[in-house]
Length: 393
Image 1: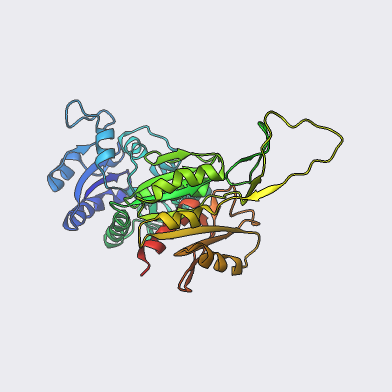
Image 2: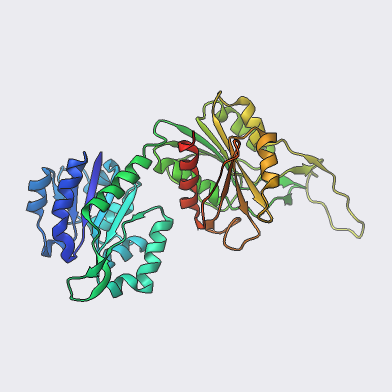
């Protein structure tokens, strides 16, 4: 596997040479990118001699003529490791700043990211740095926490670069995860549906589609191909996913039914309307002083219908948005819909559920097992959920 090792300007940069060697022993092809500050401690020649690969130091480096290195390396990397990551580099990565080769390369890449910070304990504990770490974790970066001890400036606290073995283990873990869906196609339904009352009004719900988009991103981080059938939510689907946009529940079923026949895993994260108006008026229903009666008819159960056309043995996972923490209704849905598992979230909470960036899932399996994600970003929840499903016997 191809690994890019980014080295920033910490005294701990000298340990990156041993780290590069251990990563090569673990089977990685290692290419190194140094920041300007890192070159005060280590050299380009050192890493080129160790790895047998070119080493980047400038945003304008171009080891292969005519190929922009920051794009070339970003696309070919299976994983990017920044070790040591100084406060400056870490905060720039969180903010999306790309003002040198390393930060530009990371921003241009879709590869899994591992970060091993090393800095003064007060810098590591500052509110700015903690916020940046939270932001990076929310984007599924793996943070290898620094150790407690004496740091180069003479102070003591958490800030020492983690052990080489711990960093290598973190890289192995994230690359193992990135192969769990290799060669697999995952069909995801996402977002709300809109059921028209007339030409300007519709029945819908508060779903943003953020969980579905997070699931699609997680599929790609795990090496799979994501196919996203999404209603008109506000979430932006990830680059690289196959996206089919729909409006109504009937549209969603029609679009997803053909795709389900080729899927290796199906996840129904959409908040599909249970009912639709029996009749949709042409034009606009005009205001009057008279009451209006609205007759609703049931929509098809999209995830249950997809199970009828899926390949034999395909695992089908549903979602249940519940107004409280009770799980009885979700357990009944497992049987009624023929699911392998169902993920339940309490949408009455302000920090989980509809239109927020975090979630907490209770995962119920058809065989009676349960698991809980804890409160995490939706992307972290998505990765947790998919790993639970893929690793399940």
